[in-house]
Length: 335
Image (cartoon, rainbow, N blue to C red):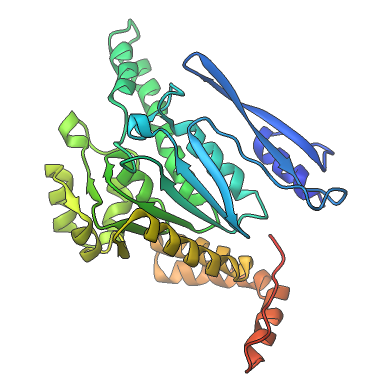
């Protein structure tokens, strides 16, 4: 069986290797006039205490507790606006790269997604629309323009779908404004908390377009109120924290960003202490069942469990549960 390092290398670079340790560097591309790369140190048998490090230009990544990684949107001077072509704004490509990478990180069991600055995100940077203006003004024929626009939209979509596809639970901790693309982003998360002063808006109709990066596909299934979803999407009006909680978009409200992050950390640590096989399997099947019939979900689960029920984690958890004194704390291996 290939080593975990080799599997990670295959995932990142698309090629297999005998590498089992050391430093892997891969380019994330050119953004504006700055090129940058992300470095990942892979732990090996020879270096069991080595720690993975993450370095991004528009994301701040920390490991505040065992099994927990916190990633913060880190362009506060630009209100964490999203842009795919400039390092000066929050980068779509870095979001995708981060979640693709931690999906293969065995030491990560839970992710907290938060933001620095006054607002969570102002949404897509309108300057990024310059690509579309240049394309529409080009000499390409309609079909070729259409294919390029399709690819651009798919690239944006894939950045947030990477959050949903990440097998580790993602907790969004939202403060201030969460506009446009911010709703797309947080709709792809598993758990959403926000501060009492937070506000949201499905803003795209105000710039002459339909939301196209996931809100119209995920938000209705989260909220479950078709009439309200259409009202919010048609009008682009703000909805504030209390309403967001009442409709089920967020599950908890907090009086400050600090108390919210502490609560998110407590929940993340609790999840990280559980069997990663059980937790990741739960996320996989919640997502699958959301998009399939009940019977299809049951059949998918039966096939999944024929392997996963053989996990050592079941015996460890059972032994801990049998300890009536509650002194047995199970230790589950990384996945």
